[in-house]
Length: 379
Ligand code: GDP
Ligand code: MN
Image (tube, rainbow, N blue to C red):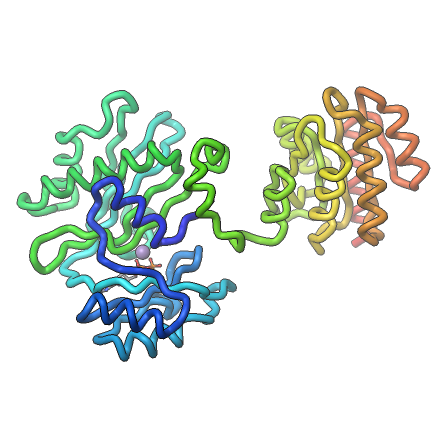
């Protein structure tokens, strides 16, 4: 789950990271009132869940409340990379001397969080990694010891940070690591962390990604979800608790079990096709869930064939077949479908689907080959 900038920064503040004073507004007059309260120059920042808002015109400096109201009026309702701006953050403007990058992610290979910093802040870190990787300084965090001060000192030296800022930098870096771990985040990023004119450090931008699988133990974070996050298919999959990832191919997949879904995608590739998605309906899926899955798959116009691969262990094959038939009543489609059902009540399920003119297969390889042939025949 992605958090908005203002949400991320408020969480950062709970971990002792200094952020600018500011509030969010949904109307220009609200933006004016906030700017009046803050006094002086303010920055109006669109709150949309994409990067590069600055370049897209979604971040503007205003010299006073009048200008803040005018700029908020232009930014609210703006389209940024396909997302409509509903909210702006009005922050006291920072006096920026230098922009640095500070972020925490999981290093899967090292099995622990890694803190990354760069003197080249403000630009996307992926860009720095591509063009000037030596400008990124990293240190791994021991999960039992946390971030030690000698580590942040090494990082501070690595990015050429003035000695007078080391103490404040350690407090921010340690806070960010604690915030990352405490929120079950997969990313916590300050870009830019700015060095202000009066030799302070300030988190001007904030970005957090929270591991969806941890949300059950963070109801406060789960409540922050922007319902418009992601595509319709992703939102629909979340609603029905389906594990779904969109891909570029032409064969829609519906499988029960993540490992089986990966295998199914591999076999589609091996048979000369490409999967349109990863979709795990999970164990024990009932017909409404199956119907939702099929609606999501068929909503993708690139899908030229659907492969249903069900292993009936906890899930009963006749239940899944009933779900497919129910979904087919809701969605009109000419897309050919291949079903491979094995396990509990497989015979019942298979005959229900055969009666409805679906192609059925016994082995997975056979099913994958049939789906690829059907997809290529249809295009
Ligand atoms: P992003 O473009 O979505 O990453 O949004 P950021 O919050 O990082 O803002 C982009 C750029 O706008 C920053 O790198 C700064 O250069 C500039 N900016 C943001 N806030 C302020 C501010 O308060 N004062 C000044 N002078 N510039 C700002
Ligand atoms: Mn930024």
